[in-house]
Image 1 (tube, each protein chain N blue to C red):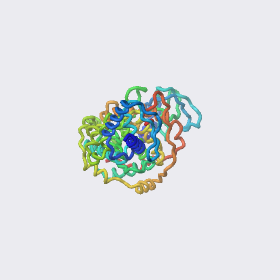
Image 2 (cartoon, rainbow over the protein chains, first blue to last red; image 1 turned 90 degrees about the vertical axis):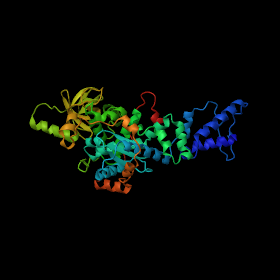
Image 3 (cartoon, rainbow over the protein chains, first blue to last red; image 1 turned 180 degrees about the vertical axis):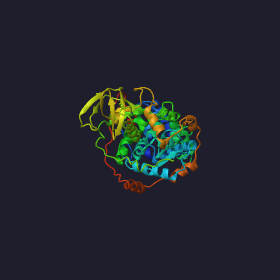
Image 4 (tube, rainbow over the protein chains, first blue to last red; image 1 turned 30 degrees about the vertical axis):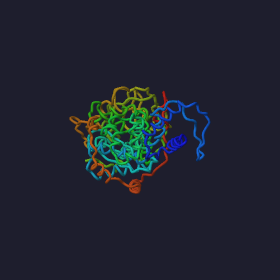
Length: 307
Length: 176
């Protein structure tokens, strides 16, 4: 029995990415029961044990289980399917608050630029979707699974395709660096997470909704500052790799730095992101002279101007 | 940004020979002012973090600035547009005015506009129809490659930028 549990635990730790059908609650219960029985039993020899399959398992841990840590170990990564479902739910909710601009040419153009930049990100296992949101608010959003949104207000600030590529690059980086998934993983909703991974949740969007909170509030909470700085670094590099001049994103940040402080269009942006001046400064430290030799295009002539 | 700065500069040159009154900016770090937009050119001077500069024009990753008696080129990322020193929020100023008001292609009535807020996002209900609409604009890899090709965009190798030096405890973002 004990060996069976250990083999189960080991295989789950090793293959956490494919741990669908696993019930975390039951696992925790089993583990706690097991620990109780271990405590009451005479001390076990600390020798390693060998299973029938020949896998070597370590001696059982002495310390109390940290549920949070266990969650980390078991869910080193969300599966692609989980990621897509989470991203779809967040995006569907966001679109419930703000609709898409009804301009096929604009949306198609943004998808073409975005997909080309995303091709340079090294993440090819997802379908990238880009949308311009019909609001004058100045902001952009990313959700797991490759959902990227730019507001019409932000789009209006842009002067050329390189700037669009830089903005989209920043959002693409949030997806490739899995910033939102890390927030979810660190959240206290560890048991909901267990249910999401469980087979009984396969058909229930409610469990995904439990994980992400109310509506699209995860978009109002924002990310860690360092995640934003990291997305700036990667976003600039993705745009440069795509053949654009790398200075698009910094130029947009400069435009944001110059906006009136009390502009209501930026209140959510500045609540969820470090101030533009801080982002420019951090980016400056990382870039220094490293991109001096990059000769990219800005493609101002091809840039789709919003009506 | 570039266009507005260049046109603003051109306008100033045409209208008067007065000292440049271009967009104000603030140095974000101690940095050099070069005589040309290249770190290989002669150093014309330097600025201290927090110093005020006047931004005259832009070229690639460089800004032509005047700082005190020195005019030359600084790295774009060493300066922030706007007055008000290093602290505080983004500040409404000459550049803001230039980008939001004087350019007729993007006149936006700022007054009365309300931004997105937390409550709207919290209350948002799943909209399957909009999500389906989003799917109609998805493009294929082949389509985006063809689109890049039309503008002679060529993918190049650019190494990732270094992570910042750990100032204090290392960021949890890098570790899990």
